Amino acid sequence: MEYKFLTWGPFVFQTKFDKDTLKEIKNLCKKDKKESANHQLAGHIKEEYNIDKAKYMELIQPAVISYIEGSRMFYKHNIGETVEIKGAWVNFMKAGEFNPPHVHTDCHLSSVLYLDVPNLKKERDEYKGTHHGPGSIEFLYGDVRPLTNNHFHHVPEEGDFFMFPFNTRHYVSPFKSKGTRISVAANFIVHELK
Image (cartoon, rainbow, N blue to C red; front, side, top):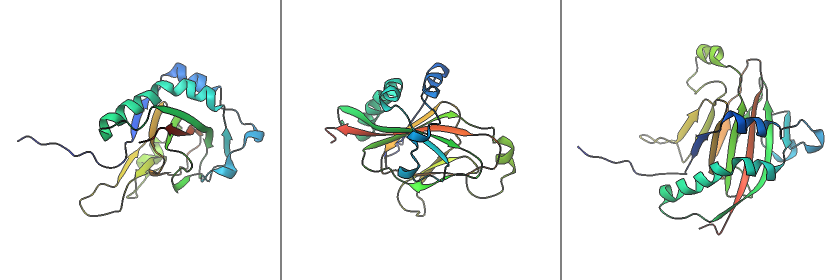
C-alpha cells in the first residue's frame, strides 16, 4: 500500500556544524558584562551576552541558505529572498538554570546552535519522569489533542543547529549535573517575506 505524510506546522530545520566552524564561533563568545543580554531575554540563565552578529552571520551563512532552500520545499513557495540577522547572543547555562516556554519577537526566524554540552547521560538514565528529561530542548506547536503530535524534543549535542519561525514555542529543561551548556541564539528578518 502506498501512503504519504502531509506537511504540517512550522518548518523546523536541523543541521550540524563542523568543529572548525564551532571553534571560530566560540571565539565570538565572551563573558563581557557590558554586553549582558539578560534584560531582553526570557531565560532564567545568569550569563547571557550579546555577540558580534555580523561575524556570526558570516559563519552560519551556509545553514541560513539551506534553511531558505528547505523552506521552499516545505511550504511549496519562496518565503523571501534576503535574510538579515537582527541579533545574536550566547547563553552559558549551568545546573538549575532553564528557558521557560517562549517565542521570539520582532523578527521572522530564530535559531539556536549548541557549542558545548555537558555529559548528562547518567542524569538522564536516572530520570524517572514522563517528560523528555534533563537538558532537552522541546519545540511545541498547536494544542494538545488526541491523535495529534504537537511537540518535538531533542537532546542536543555539540554542533547541533536549529532554525525555525519566530513564533514556534520552545523551551529548555534544566539539568543538575556539573558543567556548562553553551549555546548561541539568533533572530533574523526575512526581507520580502511572503
